[in-house]
Length: 263
Image (cartoon, rainbow, N blue to C red; front, top):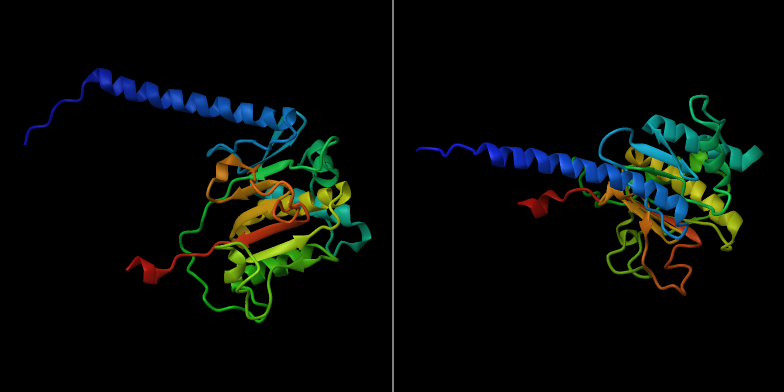
């Protein structure tokens, strides 16, 4: 069978298109970072698919961070915020800019957050966990709960019960499968918003370690479905603090594949 020769012009058009896409993505990444600083009501830093997995921003300046740096920085910020009540000592952060540590521990001057985003993708090797732990959580969610309690003291946790939930949450909620935690920060005020963002930043930095799938807090959502978009606006009833997740950080772990459905 004869094959048509590829025209040189078409080949160059393909190359130019690819270059154009890369240029646009780079421009959007820069624009997205500035947008966070200029539009406090929208968190839209773009995490490009290349380079360090995480980035923090202070004002209009962005600081790329490797995953380990983001994990150490958010853990240290949690220790600083908890003071003497912190259950662990702060890790070394000498390689992390002071401005990043300050914004993670204390929040931006004009808002509580967010100040950090990371990209993480789904783990295709995970399988559904049908059995629940005595807490009512799956094994992955129980591991997350244990990790959170190891790093944070005096937490108010909910969203799970022995035997699991069958009502009380929205349709399709991960709470019904025992895959979700709610970490409460009540009442809704500026101090609790800052504490909530310290937790949310810690969760996003440690997402791969705990197979985290979704984080929702303070009108923002992050997920492995759109890992490069960072913190996006979360649509909910504007008059409902609970549905907007103003009083709690919601976090759920990945469900995993169900081999029975793949047959």
